[in-house]
Image 1 (cartoon, rainbow, N blue to C red):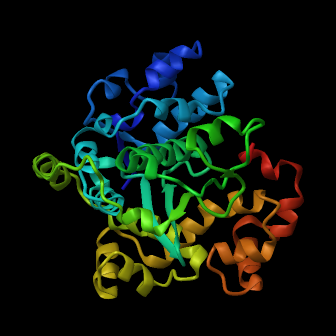
Image 2: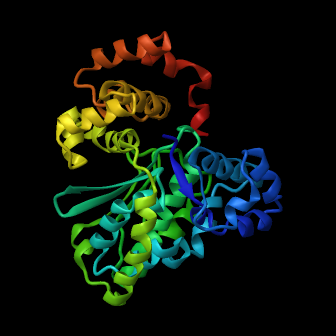
Length: 338
């Protein structure tokens, strides 16, 4: 199933596009979208088309912070009933888990995962679409919205340690640092916000239990109406688990709260299997990892879940007709990251 997003995820697009002298209607047509999709907040549209729209708009505007400008004026309520529910959860942890639970209503293409290490937590976010190399702006928008929601819930108590992006840094990183209010690390191994784990359980002083219950009555029917794609959920969780070396079919099944047999049966019903999805996710990410020369070939192998570099090299040669080292040596190899 093709990943879909709700029109509310592009809230503010028209205003930012026009601010930069762009014709938003023409750009929508260029990526195959009708202008009506942004008029109806609950309308669902192709995530790949949404990603292309943001990339093309940022490029033509000469504005690497296009997505951040869209997020700057965002409030949780701008993403509809789900936003109202998130804004009234008791803690940031509750809000993030709610976002994961209602991911089909919020944004099929955005995966959210909490990765704990000691006293720190990484609030990871990855965009899964059929345009894997065109997600820079969409990724920044996703993390920017998460940061805005976190700040709204915790107020001055929200103090992120850093924000990390896997893509390369723009010429001027000042706007990113100013937006997130913390150091921003580009060419990183993950996309995510690092903060103290204790922040997840601080009380939200503006939480209203009655409003939260009301919002949930609005969201649940929307969630029930969206068909679930197990294959898409497997792709998301593999993106998070591969760098941890925990991406066996049993690991994935456990993360999705299913038995291994149930997961395999549901994938078969969609005409797919675990190994083909594993190969697809690796293929989607390998070029991005290799384009970052700060990652050694061995480290790229680890990020893709290979226990041995030789196994990774064999896999890569079968698919690209050359070794990872030879691919990286080509002048055009890093074009996708510029």
